[in-house]
Amino acid sequence: MIPESCVPESITALARIALRESGADGCTIFLKDSSTGEIEAAFEEGTKVPISGLAGGDPSILSYPLRTGDAIDGILAFALLQTEKRTSGRAQLDQMAITIENVWSSRFYPESTRTLVKQIVKRERELVQAKILDRALGVLAKEPNSTGVDSIARHVESVLRPSKSLLLLQQLLKELEQEIEERHFARQAKAILQATRGMSEEEAHIYLQTMSRQTRKPIKVIAADLIEKENGTAQYAATGAFNRR
Image (cartoon, rainbow, N blue to C red):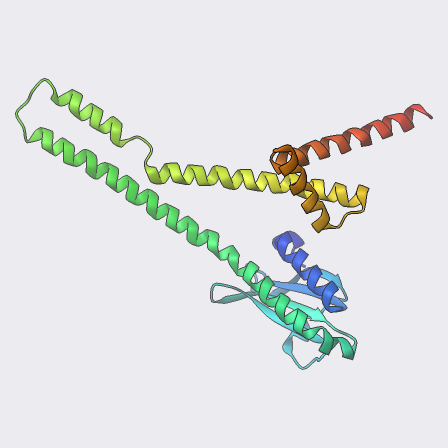
């Protein structure tokens, strides 16, 4: 079996939603082993779907291809053992399968983005060299004078400063890192609210947003404070229980 870590957590979470909402008995995600080319299970929940069931002809199994670009490199399969579920849950599984495939294929986007960034960097490098060359040729075309060295030095210093595109990429990277960090804290805080206050995920999300507006603090700060308080309470409880022994 291929390690489950090969399947993004967002995909397994969506698969669990499809499993629960459709009433299906099980879900299996198969991936193609890059070394052998064989299809193997990478994620299983509930009743396992056998590889033999992917060939078709078994009404208790619904399968959907997972594509990266034009290539099929995975299969999403559901087991529906009860006949009535094959009808009642089909529409939900079809809809969730499209959603999951869209998320799956989005893994291809970073590669295209990486190519785009490489092209930008390459063109920036070419532009820098062209600007320096043009000015240098201009200086060489003139008679030697006392300002030539200072002029070309200042020009090169100006050209080598970070470009607008580089500054934009740096700002974008900073914003992405901040959002990822905020979501990490918010996810933990929502889990605490669900466990300690009986909130649903949506209620916990609204609570964090409301506290953020009321206190005029970022959600990350609200979430971090909540996590710190919970950790402090847990540590105090553990210490108290130890001291009472």
